[in-house]
Image (cartoon, rainbow, N blue to C red; front, side, top):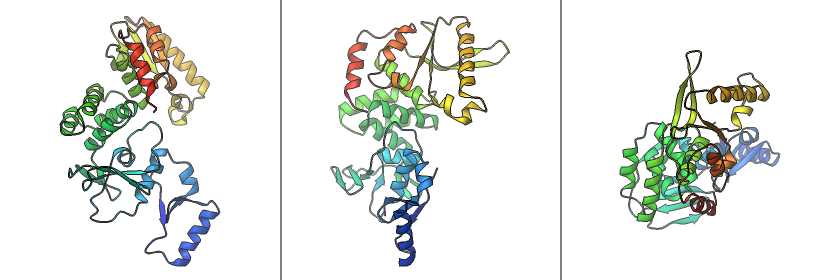
Length: 319
């Protein structure tokens, strides 16, 4: 959703601007930023990503400033998935600075002369998908970064392009972590929940799963599963609430009917040759410090020898 903005700046007469402000006082409009407003109904129904994109567009960008919207703000403009809040600052890359600065709503990241590859989105200079993904991999929580990396791979960005961008960036330690994230990223993950489940399994030292593995059905079709661990014969499904609550995915079925169909599907998968275990993972399990180790272990998936320490370390960094 692109939130439509009403601006009281140049081009609007004083009477009309006063009417806009009165509408905001009555709650009909929401103040996004000084001089920029949005319809309250549209704002309240928008996602955090769409709200942040509106905040970016509400900045009065000066021609020739050299600023490029980047990091999580670029994630919002590109429409990429994200976990958690975007924050109240618009993040920009500033090639003219060698260090960061926060002033007002703008948070600058200095690049000491490095001009990033960019595109125009909604008329705003924005880092390209490759640069955005690498920025996020270098600076954000790995659970957030893997979601973005998987998404850009799904859009056709190559792993080689990400590695090439990373090669000239960041401190050595940050590059090592980002390189690991890029190596593990997979376009086969079809949702943020699948992305963080796979990354969590990687942190735990589990074998690499096959994504979207297809089993033949009795009626000649195929049934895909989120994760297939062939060594243990384990099927793991990420069980997000959306499949039960989103009317578009329910396709006219009630939530109870979806639950019954999912149980029948599980029973059918358990009968497939080679399937020895079946497990389900929810959001709380897959997040740092969640019950993912238990879910995988109970489903027969072997964990690495240092899984406990790795999982405790992952939980120490707030998401």
